[in-house]
Amino acid sequence: MKKKAKATESEAPKKFVTVGIPAYHAEDHIADALSSIRIQSISDTVAVVIAKDDPKDDYDFVKTQFPDLDITIVECEKNTGPGLARQRALEACTTPWITFMDADDVLINPLALEYLTKEIRPDIIEVQGAFMQEIQGHPQGIRLMQRNDIGHPWVFGRLYCVPFLKQMGIGFSELRAMED
Image (cartoon, rainbow, N blue to C red; front, side):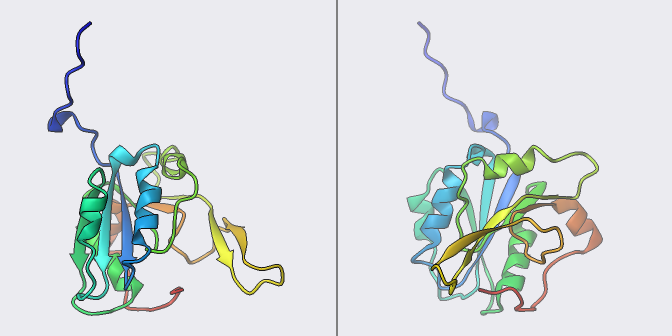
């Protein structure tokens, strides 16, 4: 029986989707977010860009802890909020598609990114799925609520066509809206 030859770097799957993660003082929980990316069915085609929103934060440990993930760490000059951190992740993106999640979020389904990518078509600039929002202060305790309303302003649960965003000059501002 012949041994299967080890894949060379040129045979490695091409990165197709970037997960942009704005991170501010997230050293204690970013590993959960990265673990949820690691278990994605298409994780070998996923790149991760962590945008440090405080130059004093240190996320270098994640490259050692997650050597199987393609992680790039970019830095904001100062704490600017998630909008400009997402913009830094977008600027560093080298894949045709990007999605965003916060450093304290997780992808709860290992097929989440695959489901989104299956909906990509040549004339599509955005693919929307659904996400679960944690509702605190509910009379019955913490609850999860599915969000899939088209008009919601959040960037979560969506894939964006990077060439279109860059060509049209679409990006994120300093606005600190939608912070949690």
